[in-house]
Amino acid sequence: MKNLDTTDRALISALRSNSRTSTSALGRTLGLSRTTVQDRINRLEREGVIEAYTIRFREDYADRQIAAHVMIQVSPKQQARIVDALMGIEAVTTLQTVSGLYDLVTQVEAATTGDMDAVLDRIGEIEGVEKTTTSIVLSTKLRR
Image (cartoon, rainbow, N blue to C red):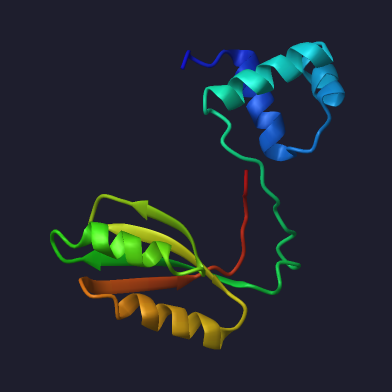
């Protein structure tokens, strides 16, 4: 994959704000033709820079979902098995390895506090999970 130029970065930024923006509108914003914008998007997709397009709900709409960040400390040499188990939990929406006191950070979403409690119990019961710390998301100040 070649390095991204200023135009690629501006295009990605515009798509990040609204991936449904038409190529014509993107072209006007970036000072490019619609065809050039489409060619750049195709290249970015082909090179794997753009993996997918998604939908983002207004915070107050998302089925009144409760979100939490769960930091997980794991037993040595158990991480791969724990990652597999976490990937099987539908409520886990992101999973990242991190450095520091914890080994993994997940974002979990649930419809109710009872559902959240059940998911957190399920995570804590995975063999090899030594410790978890959970922070409930109260609001999102920035999302790109």
